[in-house]
Image 1 (cartoon, rainbow, N blue to C red):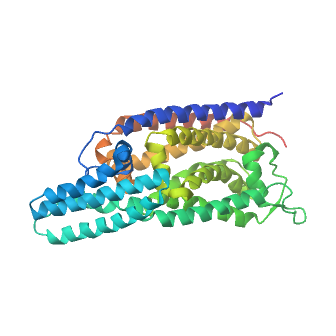
Image 2 (cartoon, one colour):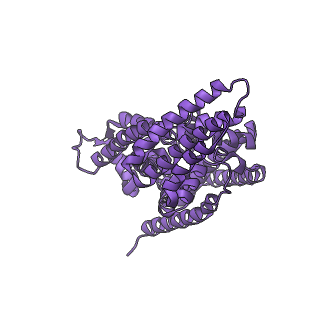
Image 3 (cartoon, one colour):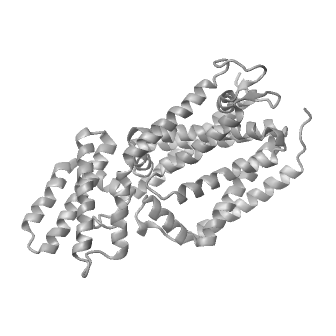
Length: 410
């Protein structure tokens, strides 16, 4: 017989699978970008889409620019075509390396990237009186190199963090590490929160608890920096703080102040599972492999998005189970706690967007992440308003249910 909890978990995973599938179908439409000028709208989506449409004629695309240079007449035009040639070699070889792991392309894109950056600096100085690019276009061309130039460093950090996360998880397998007196290893709490949440009890005690809690919290924030390694440190910090709002909300309203480190480890565990999957992709060929798999349509997108969707829904489900365990409330009360935490997060994110302006905030975020061409950003006011209304209703309804829900007797 399938228990109620197992049946609920199966339904949650199916919901996540369906959500990921429809998300991949929706994002597939972004891949059909208009064939615009090469230097316009440089981004992960734009370059990835251009590579996808050009990879069947890889050699012809790379040989086209030198031929045009030989036929050009003016020196300024030759300089621009030479920059375009290096740019083409850079992104074509880079995305070929991302998609296939081709060693030759891995070397070629680094050589072309160095030539591209040097030529861009040279043109900037040579045509200082009569610039080749507008200030905005020049900034974009300078920033697009960040998509690739920090890849090696991100791969190294991702592998170290991934090994550390898996090490703590494996060491948390029950009875793998001996108990210290009457205390279990805190990694066992990390393991149980993911795979045996109904076995968690607040009557247990754990050793190395504060160190494991601090390590998981530090890994969470550092992993966001790795995954978005080509942005400034402000974006990962803001995203990390927003991601911690549900966590600290659940810690506060669970009503067990003496168990804060234990709750911190258990509520962080579902986030760590999502990071393990994301860092596993980043550890192969960098964060751009992850983003290109997510936003550029193809088989990896249709596989990765359903997996992330299932893990996200499973994370929400685990939060309900853990909130019920720590707060000793009914299923309804635990669901209300999770809904309230999620609603507060949406309200905080929407409030920040309204504070700095919805469109301007998205433009700044996209300029840092370089995910989609700027011209694809529309006016998010209507969607954001509906989302804020939904978050407000969800938070208020969850708060009322929580206030009229009593704790269970232990």
